[in-house]
Amino acid sequence: MQGSEILSTQATRLGGSITYLKTPNGTEAFLKTARQFERLELQREFRNLVALKGRVPIPDVLDFQDDGIVTQLVLQRAPGVPLHEMCQSWEKEKTLSVIAEVLHTLWNSADILQLLLPSQGVEEELQDVALLLEQGRIDTIGFEQDSGVKSPITAYHQVKANLELRKFNVLSHGDLCLPNILVQTDGTWLLIDWGKAGIADRFRDLASLEGSLRRNIDVGAFHELLKYLDLDDPNNIDKKMSVYKLLDVFWYNALI
Ligand SMILES: Nc1ncnc2c1ncn2[C@@H]1O[C@H](COP(=O)(O)OP(=O)(O)O)[C@@H](O)[C@H]1O
Ligand SMILES: [Mg+2]
Image (cartoon, rainbow, N blue to C red; front, side, top):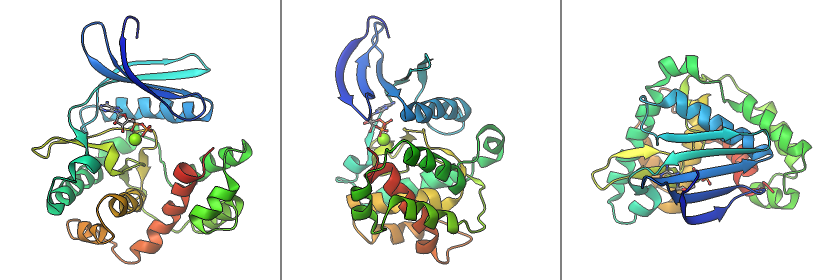
């Protein structure tokens, strides 16, 4: 944005960046810039934020530009700190009850959103994986190390073969980890980073949360979280999450 003061900037993948800035009228904002494949995700983030406004706590969009090569999204700086920082000084129960509230909000706001947002289930994620494979964006050696699966292509087919019958009927954030949940000391929360959201099944966000809770709290935290939730299909949770955990290796561990 013209005349803005840059407070800090961080490079992301393939010429992308996230810049923290102050606009001429004093508003603090984050500018997300993307090129190549990552543009798709930023375009989706903008579309999702428009659909979610007023229905789920999200940051305000200040600007969006797309010239066919570079995509830019400017968001107002939201209040709060990331939950992976706040949870260091909170009782575990408080952290888990905030996460449970986040999930309840997502899972109860799908009715109208089913009309506004596209499906973002396993098949849609696989289409994106196929694109990345085509473009040579997957680190083959890293993938095997992180997933234990012989090759990315094997993993792709493994996920494809596991398309069980699921209910794709809830709003899914798609990258629901503690850093993407901003909280204030009174427990008020807001979600950022909406590029992977859509209508999916409950195990998509549970799978990402499981890893994030393990990394930031402890191995038992996820099972404690389940006690706060009212899952109508609580059997074989690990198996239902495993497809998404494999997909997460594509998104977070093996992308080059
Ligand atoms: N609207 C916002 N308000 C406050 N902090 C933000 C906002 N948008 C981004 N951030 C900060 O920038 C970081 C990266 O932004 P994010 O949208 O999560 O992108 P990604 O994780 O894909 O790089 C976040 O973890 C957060 O610290
Ligand atoms: Mg993020």
